[in-house]
Image 1: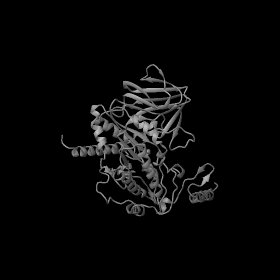
Image 2 (image 1 turned 120 degrees about the vertical axis):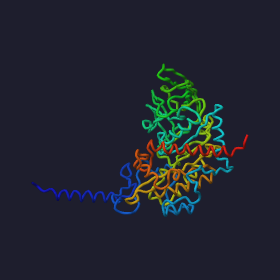
Image 3 (image 1 turned 90 degrees about the horizontal axis):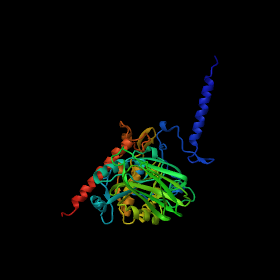
Length: 470
């Protein structure tokens, strides 16, 4: 029998040489229309920082108008220490992660928000706009938070829903089907595009485009609703056809003009299907599924959103949405896409978020804005799993910017357990976090969502204790 040992060894040596060569190729090296990601086959046998991996990646510099820099960062001493030494325990306050920190200029905090909550019993609707990244996509965390607070404060339905979605099959709050749409996003540059809607998207129907929303029984308050509002703009009087709960198809003519609202009112709706024809001038922005009153969190999560792309929202147009929605609290929760183990400075990201926070204030003047910091994220440092050293640095920077703009702030990193929290969640049975050590599972979203429920209720209790006796 012929001995192939020499050939096998030779092939193994060639593969090893090839992989070693690939490891030496710099990150971003162009091959045609593609750019290589960094590959390091020796990460498990040496101690320097390895590249991180997750289902999200840092947006290129041209998507945020910021260029990365290796120059020294203008950071607080604690932030600089975090970059040099990694995670450190809270120094400034033992309450980090236990309270919503109030940096509003008049120390009004959540006063207007909780006052609005108390008015729900008189027929008021209270809404939160939550701008986030993939940490909350598919209504993970937000679904449990919304449902629990609706049980306490009232309301049925999920609030704002998009026309198309990358995670439609992933949701447990809604069955969502669609076809025949061109989607425009603040993340994916599409060249010429209509103004982006309040959720960072715009949708243009092709001939016979469809979208259908079905309530689900997974949560207590997502099965049905009584009010639907469809947001759109139209340069002509387009036709819209719809069915409610499988009934006969009805056709209406839409009003032409800027931002418009098409309304359907019917108690106990649990399925609505739209069909669009003769729509050359129509842009659709999404719909709301709600009751006449109650509490709603509109999930405006965008996968890959570092915060910077929110500057593409036009303040004048967003104010028109807010005139219809009347948000009582705006939340921004980003940072996941900026965290790496090889982070040297965050001056570029600090500048990006500085402009974003200023822009959000223009879009939502006089509204309370709550910054929720980046949560824990872990990756390999050499052969060991640990919290990425950029996490506490970005948390500190986000707190500093919240203070600068008079926003509220919540330290999610320490609230969910601090260093190593994501590793501990991923090792639970059932798993509470995915093995990318970046994203929560639905079960983990329930745990963190209920943590936020308790946080809001504690803040509401403290607010009521400060009110003068009647």
